[in-house]
Image 1 (cartoon, helix red, strand yellow):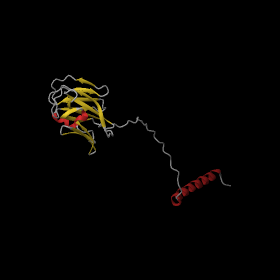
Image 2: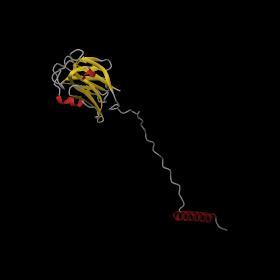
Image 3: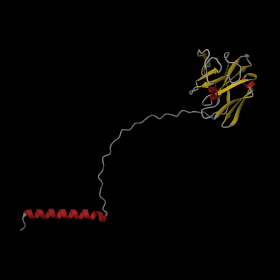
Length: 204
């Protein structure tokens, strides 16, 4: 009769032998071995509110007169005046290149405010940037002192004569456009008063 320890040894030997055979057969029989699942590291996630991109230019096909007013500090000479419109298109700075005053025009209230300059030194070249919109979709050009022509994507889509703008013949002096193309400020000699002044156009 076999002793208990011999039985234990035989069982252990058989078990070990069986396990060895199984592990040797796994590669040969291509038996899939369940992979050990790794613990996924949870990372913090941050969510930011979506911000609409700033629209640099609008889509306009026509312009109408929004306002007109005298500017007694503007000289009635070619390209002496120019206007700069802010990004929000709420203010228009109007100025004369040769020593005129700088004024702020509030679009909503149509109020003109003198900013207190006496003889500002302004870079003459800065006025050229007032002639076209942010990406050059729109451009406004004074033609022969009697017409203001608005160009969109390489084609003239709107023309204002001096009478359309309320100026005297041959006295349209300068034209400036906002970054989005919505507002256009044109200077000249006003027929209603005989004084230098401005006409503001709004696009739609």
